[in-house]
Length: 164
Length: 201
Image (tube, rainbow over all chains, first blue to last red):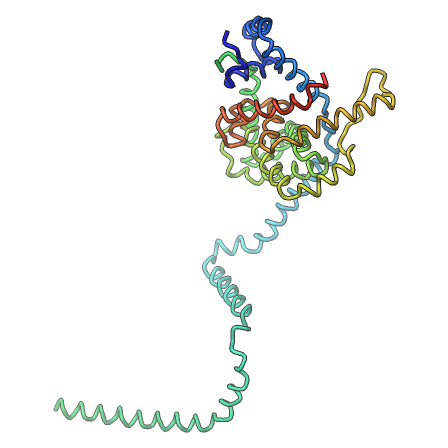
């Protein structure tokens, strides 16, 4: 046989041999080869030592309340979802759209409330000024509306004359 | 030559069918099947995680997260791979993240409490002498340090190969690499371990 140590692909033969997972036929062939191959023999001895050392490393038993803790977490998660979805579930079936719209409004209101600082810092004096000038502004607006009304009336009159 | 390496595949195939079937039942809402899966895989998962992170409390916490994720994923579960492959992929992912996130703190904790999770080994007369206990602890510590010193992927590959007896193809799927890459990882890992532990023979 070709020496397993020389080709890394075949080294799995030696690993399987040391783990006692090699079939009888391959084991016999490999053992015959190892009788004349010190490199493979050394590899196998070292690997067997590693295997035994790793065998000695026992893991601790799992604590007794592992399942209880896990099921408590699962229950908590399930009940959290149920609690969250319970009020919405029937409503979504009947009137999903209004609720979605309401949710959007709430989100938008939240976003707007989140950014009050975006308003300019001089907003307060400006609004005070507007309040002081308000009667004048109303007068101007009324005058403008009156003028606009007269203008419309005349334009319509002119248009009627031109049609005739 | 890989075909010459014959391992016990029959049991694994049967286990695949059984576990996948159980998981499909969990998907249909059968909580008892989840209990059976938990019963079967609890210890292997915790032990694998313990050997990865070398801290019993952290290992159990991570194992809880593994089974919680399995439970959460039940509705979308499809048996495209062996159940154990999927399970150990989740476990390995969590272990590697945990090691990357809190390596230093846990290392310190390990050093402070080097007997954590170490079962009291029973020798022939059930009452080991002080000297025997010391020798055992020293050897065990050497093994733990040798494994901990391996690069993370090599460590995961060795633990799945040695203790969980996963096939190369399964380890490849867990680590998302080719089978030849797994063989190479294992070869290098065992080479390092031989250099550090061969004197223990």
